[in-house]
Image 1: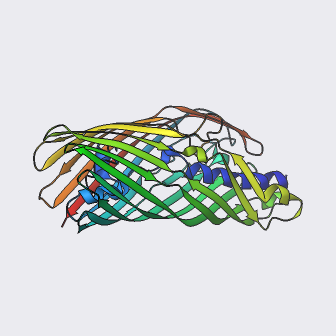
Image 2: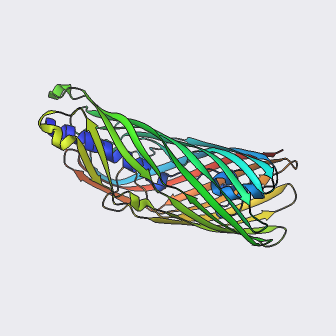
Length: 416
């Protein structure tokens, strides 16, 4: 029994880390409130404000003035769990495991003259907080998760001529997380913590073949983390299994993505946007956790454990439109679709996500030439997906998930 329980615990830590960090259903797009209004169509070509530091660093040279952009997006997610069976005896299936969450961002751009500009961005490319009710039937496969990635990006751009601009810069990324779950035996509980800092980079190019057309291409690099942390097991002393804590490490590489978009100005009032993003989720085929301090006959099973994930590459696409009512007001709208990297065999309660569609609306208000206030709202709906799990030592659990979310954004840009 001791062998089964400890192996379950350490295997679980692998699953927790992988599903939270590599789930496009919970990857964060909220780095720009103006972009949120068009469903992030034209992200790499629009260069609307200083948030282009993330969207396409080449756009900094096209802003014309020094400026600061800051904003916050809030996410109100809802999950309905239906057709549930199995799991912990007497367990519940309330769903709604994602609390109301806020995601801030901030950017500054300084024009140096002669086509040069520099900037700095602070934003969250990945993040998740999930918390099932304490009696959740599927808690052996996931109870609570909190993962945060914070990125700082110093950036430089240069307008080669009136047609072509380039830009790029390194990204300094801090990942931290705490993940917990119950165990099938008694009141067993597992808690996993880890963190690391890693470096990546973003580069981009914008081409303007005409005065009314912009084409943008942005590359966000992979980022390789080597997390240091520990896995703790508690609540099993009544079964002769003492509380234990293992020092562990986990290597994770978040995938690169390529964003291509077009911004087309039709006249003085109408602008249309389109774009597509490819993400190399297929980097995640398996996850391996290595633990130290495991001795005795269990060492061969527990020192290194691998679980298959089998993610696949995804495409996301969006179309959007902006209508300038007058000098003070611009209205925006957009529609986006996004594939999920998960598959029906490996999907778990940690990331019960499917392909999604979202519709967005936004507005920009400029009471002065120096200040713009941006507002946005989005509604996201995912296809219903099934979870069917039956891992030895955890018990069988199956259910159908229906996920949706509202997003609200508020931002401001000040030019100086």
